[in-house]
Length: 382
Image 1 (tube, rainbow, N blue to C red):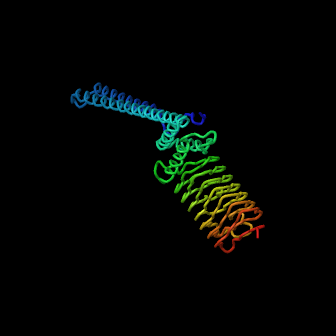
Image 2 (image 1 turned 45 degrees about the vertical axis):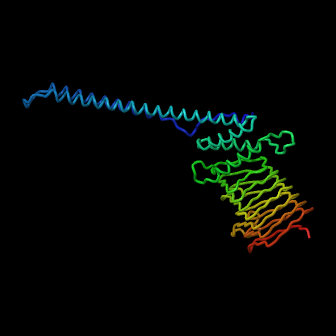
Image 3 (image 1 turned 120 degrees about the vertical axis):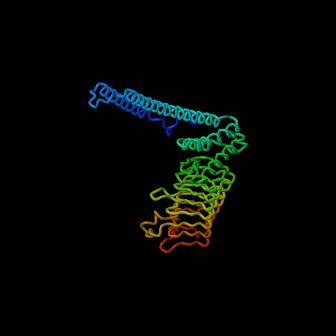
């Protein structure tokens, strides 16, 4: 079983009571009570031993009543300090017990994820997801474990060596749970503020439709090998598909928003390998630079349809276009079909310089581009 699933984590976010405050308040209270008792003693002694100039006898009962009252007040203060200290210590024990219980749940879920039986692994997936909801301080750790599971070696072909029955269901369940937690926005159990690392993961199905990735997400070197993978209406900030391989099945980016924050790396399909999948980029929403540089189109069908690349209208000069472009520079087209249908490139320049065309087809239909932007074809087949 991988060591990744054996790590034990303790809570760093839960705080035990500050015992310094206990030992600071208690001495101060005792000093105050001591001073009050001393003052009472001195006052009573002076009252009883002083000369009676008014000839009025001193009422000893009044002195006794005052003394009893002060002593009662002293006892109440001490009792309050003791109760306060006891409550804080009790809360500290409770927090430590909660942290210990959460750590034990993590260990149990991790062990289940490494089990030989698919049903037990599936139970581990749900247990880890519930733990992420209940443990905000370590939510990223739980999410990292689920992502790491998807990055583990996986054989989707039943006839091939290394195939495990039930494994596909486990992986699809993880994807579904992640997607559901990325749809609930401001909910306390939302995972939108977590980072997701699917580097090198193998996908043979699953849906991220309407998921909202607010933090970096990486599909670098991911392999899309079969099934239907859906990114429809997903919002992906700081995302990359560099070196990803699309070799089978169907992948849809329908209305997907690739939106990078200021100063962030724009989304990228650089060095991606389109070698068999049916990939549809439909009604994309993007700002800033879009790169398919060094991508290889050598099979299947890739369609850009009705996509809108907004760009920045302030960057329209030749000196700036490399930072404000849709780039297919050094892309290789050797087989299959690449189609640009009814795409609006706005103020973005479109770059095909140094692209290689040795086969397949590249088609353009009803393109729209704003004044000031350019299409740099480079050597294009006649």
